[in-house]
Every structure is written in structure tokens, then in C-alpha cells.
Image (cartoon, rainbow, N blue to C red):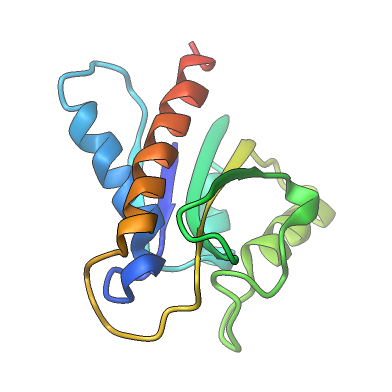
Amino acid sequence: MIIGLGNPILGDDSAGILAVRELKEKRKSSHEKVEIKEFYVGGIRLLEELMDYEKAVIVDAIIGDRPGNVRLIERGTLSSKGHGSTIHDVSISQALDLAEKSGLRLPELRIIGIEILPPTEFTENPSPEVEKGIKEAAKMVEKIMEGWN
């Protein structure tokens, strides 16, 4: 399972979604059975989706000071104030912690972060720096998937 997270109308915050769209486009002719989905929410809803899979990759925008920089994020370094952290839901980090404490089975999970500056305007287009990061993140997901076979 590959999941791209983000908000498609907040410019660079759509980086995770755009990375998985690029991956879908590249893999149109592939016969591999890997689901690729876009998600606009995190937290508990994302956790529910993940529990049905053995392996998963999440691609999401992360606030940083080097827009377009792509990195593999270790679970222990996830912020509880990141994507999906609102008064109506929990963050990805909090949802994963809750699942672990509850004894729920989680997939082997990799998280790829594309650094962005905090979004300040409504647009469907990412900045040129983040556009480069989107392409790099899609390639990183492909490499991870190669190791799944």
C-alpha cells in the first residue's frame, strides 16, 4: 500500500498526493498488485486503512527549512503536531502510538517526508523546489517497492 497525504488546494502541502499521482502514472503498465491511494486526512482514519496491509509507505509534506528536501522519517522522530493534527483528530504519530499500545497489528511502515515551508495561499500548484522533491520522493517509493519483491 502506498498512500500520499496532503491538501490538494494548499500548494506545497499537496506534495504527498502529487508524488503518488506521479507514481501511478509511471506504473500504469505494471501488473504488480500494489494499491496506491490519495488521502486528505491522517490520524485514526489513516490508521484504519493501514491495518489491512503487510507493508506500506506514506508520502507527506513536512514543515522544514529546505523546501523540496526529501527524507525517510523514522517513527521515533515523527512530530505529534504534524499533518493531521487538529482538534478533531490525532496526528499520524499519535495514531501509530495508539495502535501500538492497543496491540493492533501495523504494517511494516516507511514514511517519506518532502520538506515545505508553511503554506500561506490557496493554489493547486507546488513551488518549483517542491516539484523536484515530488519527483525524488516518487523514485524513493519505487526503490522501496523493489525491495518488497
